[in-house]
Every structure is written in C-alpha cells, then in structure tokens.
Length: 235
Image (cartoon, rainbow, N blue to C red):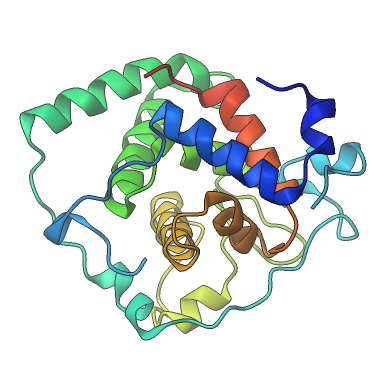
C-alpha cells in the first residue's frame, strides 16, 4: 500500500487507476444480480480536520452542495421494479459468512447487537440487489453519516446515506420518508449504482457524482480510506 504522501503526489487519473486495481484485486466490483433480482437503472485531500467529520456533521462552509442531476426515465421506476426472489442456499451461506466478519467491525459504530445485525442484513441485501459491494456501501455510510439514521446536513441531505430530498420528487414517490433507514439505504444504493453505470464502472467518478464533487477526488479518496481501514476483507 502506498504511503499517503506518495498518493497525494499522484495525478487524479493515476489515483483512479490505482483505486481500480486495488478494487479488482480485492474482488470489490460485485457482479450485478440478474433478472428480477437486479434493480433497474441504476481533487485534492481534505484541507482541514473538519473534512474528517461525517458529511452530515460538517459546517455549512465545509459542505459541498449537491447539484440536482438530470434524472433518466429508467431511474424513475427503479424503486418500484424489485420483485422478491428467495435466495439460494449458496447466497444464504455467503450472506451469513459476510455478516459474521463485519459484525465486530460495526460494533464501534453501533453498540446494540440487534440493531447491528439488522443493519448488516439490510446493507448486504440492498448492496447485492444494486450490484454493489456491500463493503463500499458501509464505507459510504461511515463517511456520510457515521451510521446515524437521523442525520441531517445543513444542505438538507437526510439519513444514513445522506439523500437529498429532490430525489423523492424526481422519482415520483412523494410518500417516501427518507428518515426510514431501510428506505434510505434503498435510495442510496440505487443512486450510487446508477452513477456507476453512468461512469462505465469508474468508482472514483461515481462516488464524486454521488457527493456532488465530480472532477475532484477528495471524497472518493475518503470513502476508499474508510473501506481500507475499517471494511477490508481478504478474498
């Protein structure tokens, strides 16, 4: 693993290539589930210690305002297209094994054992449905809200994955409550998967889009550090 000083001296394309190679080596581009199991559709280092806080807790001056994107028609039906499919025995075994590995890692953020188990179950389920690696989803949640389901940023982003309320309007789901942590997960995973598709698998750019900082790398690098330090699994 390169030192932080050497990483900072790399150009943005070099950092994207390095991150892609690291992800590929770790097997963190989870293969999308097929058919009815799959949801449709889809810089610089932080300048100060405030940028080390979860996005939801940063001061207004430190936060980046997320720009409302152009929403493709295919994404408007995304949250309505899921049909529950019973998991296979292999999938059940893989989920249980993953949860047993992640449970002690999550304990520092969620002391309650029952809530921790439910959180891991939901994260694994939503990530796999969206074709994302659940470890990356954990890293995004850590950076965005530090696993606080009622977090609200000064820019108005809400919940575990800090979803902007305009998504409710754009997706035509006015009754949705982004304070519902499991619905928030569904939104966040769907949006990130959409951006990953838009960026043709470039996770660095997809994460920057998610944060509203496309063209900069500080946010993707922060997510990747969280993943490396807290959610890495040897494959």
